[in-house]
Length: 390
Image (cartoon, rainbow, N blue to C red; front, top):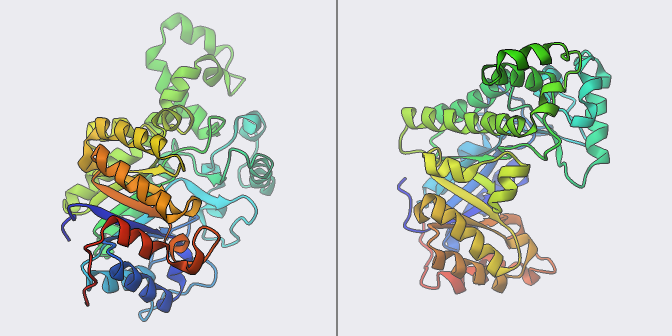
């Protein structure tokens, strides 16, 4: 389906996809209010809200011939000329409070691929990853550091992690008629991740060609400390971590285009480009400049309109307005405030608008009395829209 002149998208969180009736209602609401693109979360925490070859479905969801959430969204949306982008959480694997129990889940199958925080690096380097205490220590660390860590990630440096993520994307692309594929959590959670054994070992190999003979000999005598290279070359370790994330995006982008050049590849990115680069290892401005994305969806959730305007301007300068969608935090502000940010993003040249999230815009709340948020935005931001029947 061709990309509309202005993308008007809803992020649809996975809980909407567990019931056929909620899917049909969601698509109808989108159609009634001028939404032309749905970004639907089909991979949440290493689980699949579609018929996956590689990952289990979440507890309580059974995929059958009669009910496949992604297939149903596609059927309902395409009948109304609405594009569908499959949203896959990339490196985020498990919640900190309720780790997965399914033995087929990657968290349980491959604990050696989990991202490791710096404070645990030396201890876990010496442990067997299949020892239950290995995962327990990571989980407890994430619980104790909620201020900067959302949960448990996989290591983007591990070749097996990269291959698994690649396989997920290709599986969706090959079996579903999606209009786009959307990266989320394509990053690390914070600067103190990932110091896993595989990341430290691969950094050593990555670094060696950049060292002289004398440096190699000096550090060889210090290799009993697994962190010696990361600690001694922190800037280069940051570059290495960024390169691992970028490699995932680059490989998948070109693989998608080779198979179907009409499918868009987008990424949800931290709107503050400096924060994204320095603290998340997500160099999305570089991805835009190098042509690894069709659009960056800025998570511009700030409630200050000028801040959002400035963030959109940086993105437009990096990739051009056609490659920038302003993702606005409807869950944080009233409808009038969101409309002000739509106007600011348009003024800066953004090609699209996305709203986080569908639930926030249709469920009554303090910010959304009466549940009329989506209708109010539609009337103010695209008032000439008139619903069309499928």
